[in-house]
Length: 197
Image 1 (cartoon, helix red, strand yellow):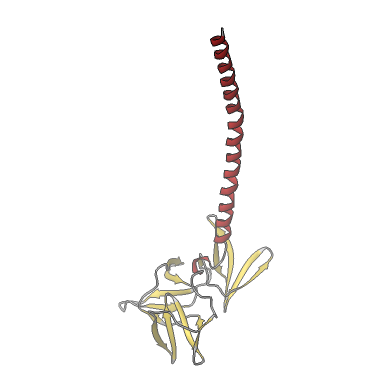
Image 2 (cartoon, rainbow, N blue to C red; image 1 turned 90 degrees about the vertical axis):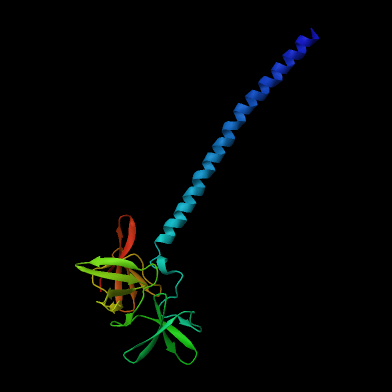
């Protein structure tokens, strides 16, 4: 009789344990599921915000007009129409005073022998361009050089150098970098910047 009673008690406690397990487990699982989408949404929002910065491809490079005290290693010195420029990774520097340099726009007609990694090929109209850090190049004939050319009106780029002024007109965002004006628009779900001036 005592054995039967003991057995009955064991079944009772086991049943209580199983019931408690099934009551508690869905709550904890629900809590985990609820936290997971929040984390994903936050990461997605952060990524989307970064992609809408006009200079996101060139965040690792100095902005146009910046003054630096020291030039990077491995640069190339170029002479163009009496001006001396220093070129490194698609960025052009010009001496400012005795001990500093300013980041400048590449002058039209200047030629370089190599373009930095990450440059983009752009076809606009019937012409083929190479683009990097706000500068358009065309490949010269047999000389294996790249010549700086005027930015073609209507061409679209994925990113522009930092140093621009931004303004919104009638709901459209415009970026002005030196004498070039870009209009932001969407293409295949991503922002692009069209040269409008």
